Length: 201
Ligand SMILES: [Zn+2]
Image 1 (tube, rainbow, N blue to C red):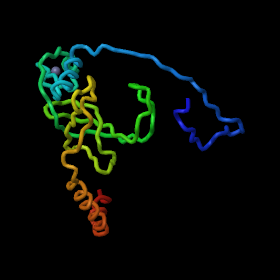
Image 2 (cartoon, rainbow, N blue to C red):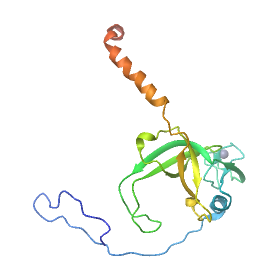
Image 3 (cartoon, protein in one colour):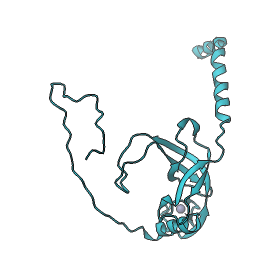
Image 4 (cartoon, rainbow, N blue to C red):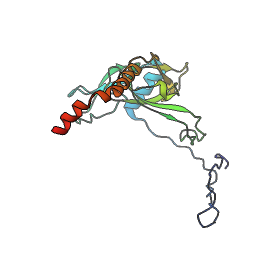
C-alpha cells in the first residue's frame, strides 16, 4: 500500500521477465498479551517511580534486569527485588538506518535510531533500549550511560524511559590507544631481529 518506495536497481530477471511484487493489502488487528507479575511490577515502577527494579537470585546472587521468574543459572525461583540503574554501561549498539514497519503500531519506524544493550549498575544482565546518539563513531562499548525518563504521565511500557544518553561523550582513551598502536607499525622495520628469532624457532 505504498509504504515502501521501490528502489530496486534491477527490475528484470536475468532472462528478461519483470521482477514482480506481491501486494499483501492492508492488515490490521489488535492484540494484547499478559505481562505477568514480574513485568507488571517492572513497568509500574518505571512509570510511577522512574526507577528500574531488578530481581536477585537468592542462590547465586545474579541480578536480572529486566526481571524474570527463574534464574537461568540455578533454576531457582526469584523473589528478591532490588533497585538497579538508572546509570549503566554500554555493552553493545546498532545504528539502524533501514526503515521498517514497527510491529507495536504498524507505522514506519523513523530512522536512524540506535538500539543499545546496557548493563545497569547493580545488574548482571543486559537491558535493551534506545540511545539518542546516532553517530556510531561517538559510541563505544564500555561507555557510561544514563536513562532519560519520559515526562509524566509516563506510558506503561519500556518507553517510560525515552532513551539512554552518554554521560561523558568525550572519548579520550581509545584514540590515544590507537595512536600508540599506529607508531609501532612504523618501527616494524627495525624489528627484523624478532622475525629472525621467530623463524629460527
Ligand atoms: Zn541463581
